[in-house]
Image (cartoon, rainbow, N blue to C red; front, side, top):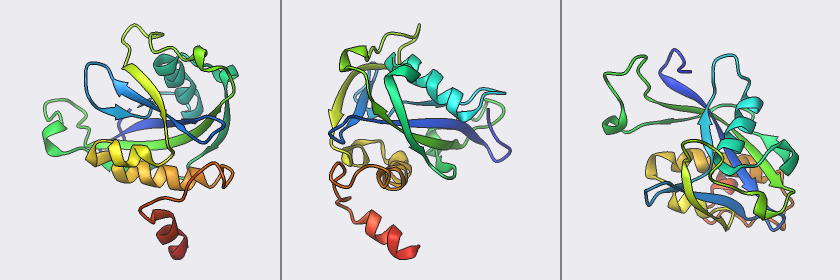
Length: 175
């Protein structure tokens, strides 16, 4: 679904383990890595979309994870103009995302990247909590930073290191 401003409604998933590391996946046939994410279908609520995308991209079900939290508001990013499909209607200029923070409670061997007829990922690994901000494609960096900052507060303080860029500190000063 694309809203009236041209943003595709989407969910993002930050899956963490008990050590505070996060699931990081490589897009199939590419060198780029990202968190699982995907579009919200018409008449689908964000939580249902999140569980559908979680299964399609990681093979995990609601029984394999606990929901720790969700961002309060939508986070937006614009696509660079070279990625906008100008001949596609309605025109999509970016994504509008609600982010979920999940904790894996199943064993890692439950993670399967081949549950969908068109897998999105071909590899995955656990990375430090803030690693994705440094590695994700440039136009998603700020959304990742905002989602990690907001949702990281829900984890125990010893599981999540301080944001090395100082982003959390700047955000708290503005509250």
